[in-house]
Amino acid sequence: MQSLNHLSRSPAAPAPAGEMTVLRDIMVLMRDGVQLATDVYLPAGAAATDTFPVILERTPYGKNQPSRAERNAINETPLARAEVAAYFVAQGYAVVYQDCRGRYQSGGSFVKYTSDSDDGYDTCAWILTQAWCNGRIGTKGLSYAAHTQAALGSLGAPGVVAMFLDSGGFSNAFQGGIRQGGAFELKQATWAWRQALESRELQEDPERFAALSSIDLDDWFTRTTEWKPGNSPLSSVPEYEAYMFEQWRHGEFDDYWMQPGLYAEGYYPQFCNAAMVHMSSWFDPYPRTATTNYSGLIKAGKGPVRLILGPWTHGNRSITYAGDVDFGTAATLDGQLARDYLSLRLQWFDRWLKNDATVPDPLPPVSLFVMGGGSGKKNAAGRLDHGGRWRSEQQWPLPDAQAQVWYLRREGALSTTAPGPASKESDAFLAYRYDPLNPVPTIGGAVTSGEPLMFGGAFDQCEGPGVFGATLPYYPLAMRADVLVFQTPVLTQDVEVTGDISVKLWISSDCLDTDFTFKLIDVYPPSADYPNGYAMNLSHGILRARYRNSWEAPALMIPGAVYEINIDGFPTSNLFQKGHRIRLDISSSNFPHFDCNPNTGEPEGAATHTRVATNRIYLDATRPSQIVLPVIPARKPTA
Image (cartoon, rainbow, N blue to C red; front, side, top):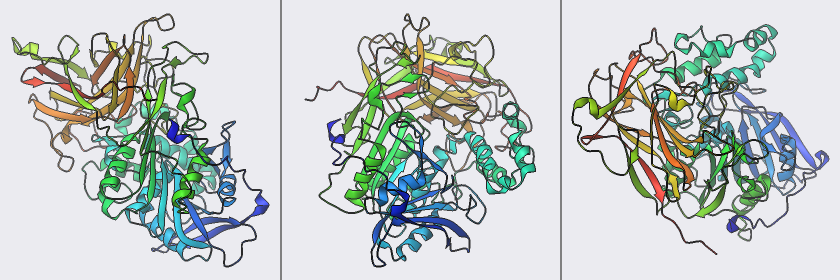
């Protein structure tokens, strides 16, 4: 990827602490009277009249804690935020870190996401009044610190001219990050449990800390349908429990979800007109966020805007693997896509925050990693060698992507030939029973913050001792009676799929409401290292049937009635090699990634009982269920 390997400088050595002036715990006043704790790092010895471009990061993870986003490129140890600040200060920047509302040293109550737009705006306005600010602000941060950027950007925060959003920045939290397809992402519960243990309130209350730390999450997650306010794993931390149930029970897409901290795509016209990088990865909850923001902000005339999509799990840009699959030494950002993460952002900020036209822009419009092409053998670390390579593109979606329809056939095939008419009604569908008390377990995927119950990445889709909800003798998911499997014949040539994945199903159920899920899988043939082959997950999707027609106005089903539904999956980029198969799994659960639909039609997050649903997928000529794959034609090699 030649256009990304020309960073013009070697990484700057962090300045010694004595070469910085640090203003600690400045309490910055917000519009509602709450004060937020803020640290400012300036070059030592700066005159009172000296001004600098400012780099801001707003975080719930502690402005004085080691950075979860920043790691030493050599030994992968977390960097102290002071070290990161020193790196940029040595290059002529002021750096500002701030604790989000209700976290660590800041005042107010933590509500997660919904206060960050106003707080971010007010913080930028405050920065512009400071004598050390030259009137230009850049923002950075991973995950939640990317969400805080999109939140302040949605209000057009003053002074912001450059942004670097890493693995976050909700385009629409209703469709990725909190909910997806109407279902609730239970990582919000595991994240809340861990973060509450670090909260100021519990750190100062040993009794409550002991109560929360002794919680048996495994036990609680075996009975999520029993959770109620005051009876959940978060009951000892009411403010965390309150926002979790607010998100879970707020099913309809309404004004709650259209807030600027949750819905950047509703604010593109007034979004900061800044130079922006939107970065995510294929096994992260935010590739749809990144691609939607990239396309939408360009359409709104913002920018320049850049997109990076790697083969990583959440924020793990410096390792070559995701889950149990390795993508080769070229997979990392550090040393491959760029010299290292610090240098990449330094050049980005030098070009656009300092507005120095002599500094080359370090990024093409789109940088994506196409997975696949490896040996398929087990490497020295015991992971599947799937391989892959970086490629530069000029836009997203890729203009040469061809929407290729593959039909689900009753015999379990995926075929480009549409099905014919069924000779009798029973030949027109396949059926399975979905029991909310025995859901299909989550095995990898676009998951973060789910530990210790679920882990992101690519894995063979087979139960095992590390899979929550798995039972002996650990069969492949394809053998479950509640999973329908459709796959192509063995491929006679390579097929590249790059883009958004969508599935159209014709369905019915004997219940008022139920879920439908899909998973796109690259199936390796049997080999010496993998005698049973290897079923590698790539993309997933889910739809809660009550939202089949409208996100704003859910409607229960009529039992037995047939409906057409569309399930939007996460984007991916994968080379299905000759000799492999493309597989699609259809089911009704993916737990604990998503909450289990109790099938009763009751309000979400408030089930009183469950029902077993008999669900049908129709596969005949008049109801042709299908998956649409964005296939990239073979390209001529470039010099």
